[in-house]
Length: 330
Figure 1: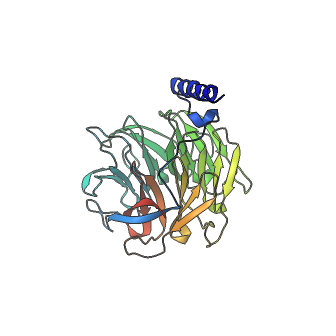
Figure 2: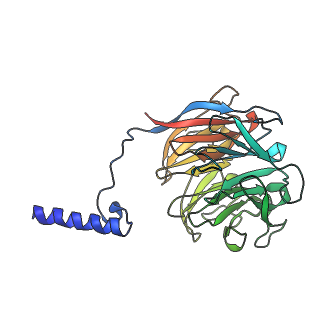
Figure 3: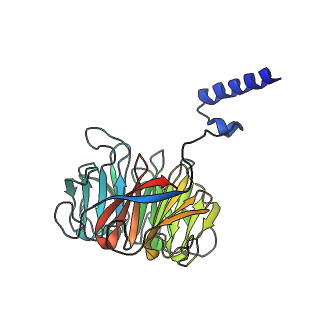
């Protein structure tokens, strides 16, 4: 009997490997990880200060950390939506200035309050050009390639688009905040679908400011006006929501940023000047931060980005800087 059991396990593992199926999806135990304890954050470093010069920022609202590296961009190079300066800045991982692109205006390659950005595996940069009510697609150096959207409520139109996220197939999800919905496009701006609409029930939003995806293409939406995070499948069916208006741990006040990895959901609890960590079922794990201007303190944090080695980069908007933290276990 023991031999038969181990033979069966061996066959299952071979099948899983051959078809790229996780072993635990077939009923076997998940792999044991080295993380023990409750995840929390520790401060690592900060980048920038108020200004319009190189590596300076004015109310930056989003940050993206490169997860691939080649001759154009290294691992953990940062792209910052320098919102008040109407530009995108690129920094090396140590915070040194690399280059910038964009200026105020309505032409291709120009911005009016760029509020969200992401980069795909082909090194195309997507920017939520908020007050131009459009999305811009640019190459890694900021040369404009395509733009879509205009002010309005029809499909493919936007009112103050904010957070952006890409799935593994290159589809772009846009937090269309003023229309209380998430819109989905292909990488060339062709409309695919919509999730949400104004409301307070599950699957509805009030001024959603950000969106993130996990590997199963579930959406995590910073439902800002409802003071919660909603997890929704790719077809728009609600899975779970968590958070309520308040200042206690696990409560939220106008959350404007969300990021997700294989285990955890990280929330920029903007009105409470902190980052909260939940598991992917919405169970509270820990909170970090308080209002202030010293290292590790926060003032209106908005955008979040995850690095490849446990780093979390935070657009500390009203402190005009980017802060880097690391996940540790206590």
